[in-house]
Length: 130
Figure 1 (cartoon, helix red, strand yellow):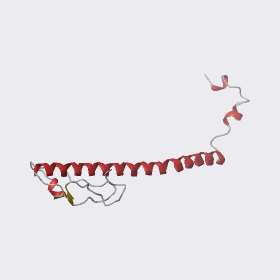
Figure 2 (tube, rainbow, N blue to C red; figure 1 turned 135 degrees about the horizontal axis):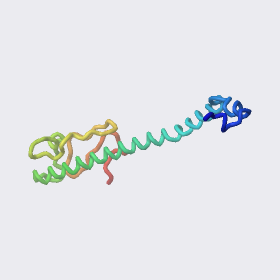
Figure 3 (cartoon, rainbow, N blue to C red; figure 1 turned 180 degrees about the vertical axis):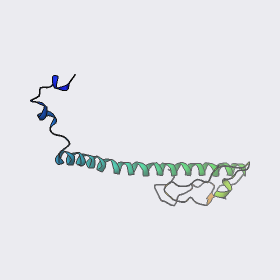
Figure 4 (tube, rainbow, N blue to C red; figure 1 turned 60 degrees about the horizontal axis):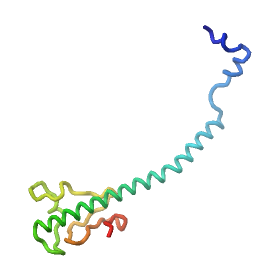
């Protein structure tokens, strides 16, 4: 079976003679892709920073809970201080398995007072809600 039986011979060059895309068509596609990227990239960056902030707040909650548990185990009073390194360990008095790190590169307070919230060096967005 030949293709010529199904398509008339006079129409063949008109339908199959043009191959590829024109410059205008390619430019329109590139423009549409550029517009989509201009919309998507800022939202992606904002979502990534939001998730880093939430991760830091979760670490602060974990540090706060470990501090309170340490205070109950050691019968420490309100305002007593404990080092972050005392909460992390592998012995029987381990309150946190690994030292938490801020996803945005901040550092946590090294000396924690019982009853006060731990802080991150990034600032107000990386803080426990009151």
